Structure formats: C-alpha cells, structure tokens
Length: 79
Ligand code: SF4
Image 1: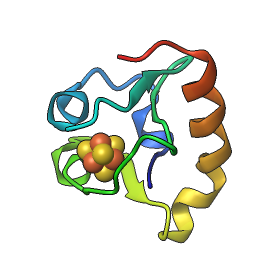
Image 2: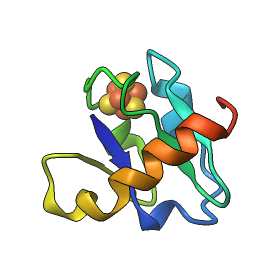
Image 3: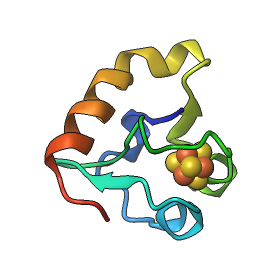
Image 4: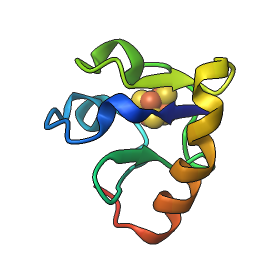
C-alpha cells in the first residue's frame, strides 16, 4: 500500500485524488490519507503529488504514518 506523510498537512493539491483508480483517498483532520485495505499499490499517485507526500509502505520514512492513515481512513469520509 501507499502512505500519505507529513508533507500533506495543509496541502491544497488534489492531484492524487484525481488519478487514483480505486478512489481510496480519505479526508483526515488536516491531511488526506490512503485506506491501506483499498489501495491496489499501483503507484500512480506518488509522482503526481506536488508536495512529495506519498511513499510506498516499503519506504522506511512511511512507517511512522501508517497507523494514522489507517485510523483516519476508517473514521473520515472518502474524498
Ligand atoms: Fe490509489 Fe494507486 Fe495511489 Fe494506491 S498507489 S492510493 S491505488 S493511486
């Protein structure tokens, strides 16, 4: 799965949401998140993000944000 990181906070771009083929972005408190059970790992969103806030879960930098992505995706609306 792919994970949204810190750089997304207060970002106003929605390029990732527009390109995701499975519509798995969710609104969070102050950032977007990816639902880990819905992401199909296509990787299309990563280069589209102007804030460079999206990484695969295989990248060590994403580890600290995985729980938050899951938590927000379960309680916030789909976007
Ligand atoms: Fe959507 Fe693909 Fe990005 Fe996963 S990797 S969030 S499926 S665009």
